[in-house]
Image 1 (tube, helix red, strand yellow):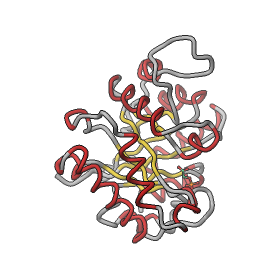
Image 2 (cartoon, rainbow, N blue to C red):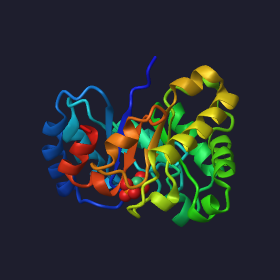
Image 3 (cartoon, rainbow, N blue to C red):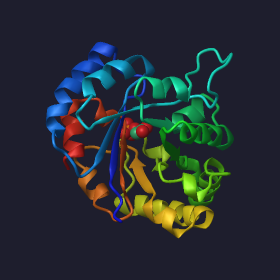
Length: 250
Ligand code: PGA
């Protein structure tokens, strides 16, 4: 079965609820009846409810940018998968490089979150990717293998269907420096190969691997028409409805 591409907007720490609602109102008409790709908007926690309300019935899904692994408890400042699920969130970005870099997330903590997301029926969009120094030192594959193994540790093939992996080379995030379709494809092949080893060929063949890192209307088509690239995780260029609309409608 061909993999249905997924295109997700990662708004990071941008937009108030009013701005998020305004975006949604302007964006939805641009993707009305869009069937080729699954579309997911990931606002900050404070805007989840307004975006969910605005997107109801549109076919556009709403995801969180992070979550904690416990259902509830004394974890000041954290948000649980139970809470997300209760308001209609369907996806969660996990282990974004900014979470790894600024908030000390590791493959191990991300793996716990991934298991919790699956347990609660949230589709995890789990991020992997090398930093520039690792690429320049020829360590890209080693990093991708380690991260893929780490975040998927203990996952069974029968649980894996909702998992989406996002390959985001850290040197391409917010820098305007996009990986070429060839570079991205190669990395996706490495990740898919490891998923096949861990979870079997059938799971690997159906798992969606997104590319993220300076995806823009101008490069979306070249990236997304690559066989190995099953969609995109878009930061900066997803903040404007016209721009994100162009990416989705590449
Ligand atoms: P960018 O961010 O599109 O602004 O490079 C992508 C991401 O961090 O998910």
